[in-house]
Length: 507
Image (cartoon, rainbow, N blue to C red; front, side, top):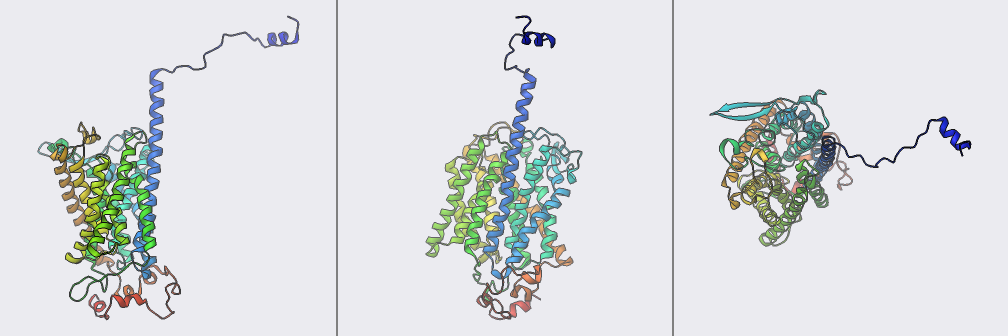
């Protein structure tokens, strides 16, 4: 009825009936494409950040492994190095290192397409351009800081931190803390970033495929050379220059065993590292929408298991009993070696790579100690240096061409020698040589200068008593926990010292 209250109210507000509208309105193609791209970028950023968080947590694993494999009187000193290297390296990487490494990388295709980091310093030789270092991104200025660049910084920073941490294990129990601090700044600001630029930042090693026809150039998916070989070479040079711990070698040159104080700590640290390694390797896709992450993760897991088992079997057969610490180093060796080829090989090849690593780490440990006469308390040189090298060689042998189309501007999947491309192995060997020369020379020069400025080695008396109080100012364990009376020194020293002659010789 016209006069009913409802009709009068609708007439008052001017209500008119309209035909029903469809629930969904189809956007135009450009709007839809942008929405999809924005979602993909967001997923990639979240994935890369989470992977970076996992890699950051690996620092706890390094601290546990290194501290467990060294002596109780140096717990605070070893933990202190593992703690502070993270902060020191990060600040120098923020100020200088990130710009040197990634300043010329170009468009960030998976992280928003930012093109700000496109200023690479290059030299032209025989008509080819060779990138040497980046020239953009220093101090992360607000003018260039986007979500994609911030994500890349965090992810690359924690990788650098891994490389900077490796020497702390090889040089533990006698490295002066002040020298360690300055050297960590140099690793984060110069030594690591320049080589990383050559491989990951658009530098000359990545371009070997374009300039010299060597496969896809030097390919290192997640860091066997960039991270681990860099850390291993630095550890080798540093430990050699620093000299062995007092009592490590007998007067006739025979090495003495100096056991670590806490095997459970070392085992726990190994599993923390293995867990974080899923972020290390799978995260290196820089893309949560790249389903290759599943294959990368499986290959990573298989190589770690094969490394632990082969190390156990080899030691058991050679020494008559298994060794838990060598099982740990075998697992870590498998992880180091598979880091470069994990995206390009089959699971069977990953098991082969890990199995070789487990034997290699044992052989290399004995070689470093018995032949080179270098004291490496935790086996860092064997784990990271030798197996970082093996990982690059393994990529050059086993890459099967199923992944990597377009990497470093080369079409087709990455193939190794066994799949028809000897050039890929050659590019890997060039990268290994370049790493050894650059990292070896810069490490030697840096430590030479530091030795004259602050000294590299702790005083012999402090080394014998333990570095915790002299270097850090606090005991890692109370003397009661160590079973010592207030005036008593560590009884473990008697196992490795016949007298104080060796200490006097180091003065």
